[in-house]
Image (cartoon, rainbow, N blue to C red):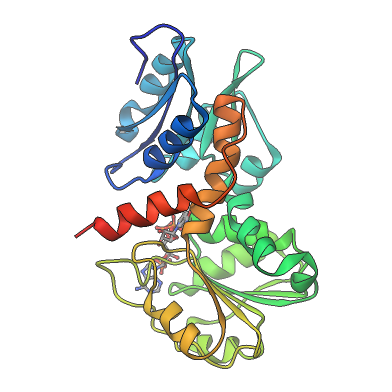
Length: 285
Ligand code: NAP
């Protein structure tokens, strides 16, 4: 995880497993476009050695930081001396960098979730809207925190294991309520936004057991999954005439602030990075 060469800034993403991560491809594309003396790798780390390995990495002054993916996001927050309000609220971090000589934790998944929504339909569209979020894991929590910043009228949480949705709704309160999984179809009625933040529909997993109908006529369906790029939920949404957004834009939108924090410069604007990721995803068997 450390650089052997002088003055080359290094960073990486850690997780277990990690082979599937697209972050190195995207960050190295941006590094190349900007001509930076930097590199971004991936390292598989077990929970038992997380603290030692992360601490060792930061001993190298050329090591600028680390992105964190499953299952270490909560543990990563605990490693930091200070944390952003987003990371504290999420109870999880996907970024660790040095700040004033100390480890600082941040969570860019929240911005990653909201940025594509704002780009797709603007801030006003989501004010006083009704949103439905499916799932109760880390992605759903980030989506919920992001969704709340858009000032919706109502957020309905649905999760296969009802108790987890209820716990999450209770923790946030305000416009957030949980509805039983058995009532999920009715819960969609008139909603402006449907978010799939569950793992259902991912390549190799069962499709989400929900019909994409009953939403407001101009509703947007946002599936946080990007493997495949078009889940059956999104395919159905398009046929029904709803807007459709996959998880790739979220992946890129969470990587942007990470890149800035790691390398001190904004990543290039434009869609070239997205095209690189799509090509890689389409080449996968
Ligand atoms: P997680 O913490 O493991 O949570 C998984 C969630 O999916 C749980 O709520 C689980 O429900 C639900 N679930 C699993 N199988 C299901 C099924 N067959 N039917 C209904 N619900 C099911 O995972 P996570 O980190 O939140 O990630 C969830 C999804 O978001 C993944 O597909 C991931 O790829 C995606 N994601 C995308 C991005 C991005 O940048 N685009 C970032 C993060 C995550 P139970 O509580 O009942 O088990």
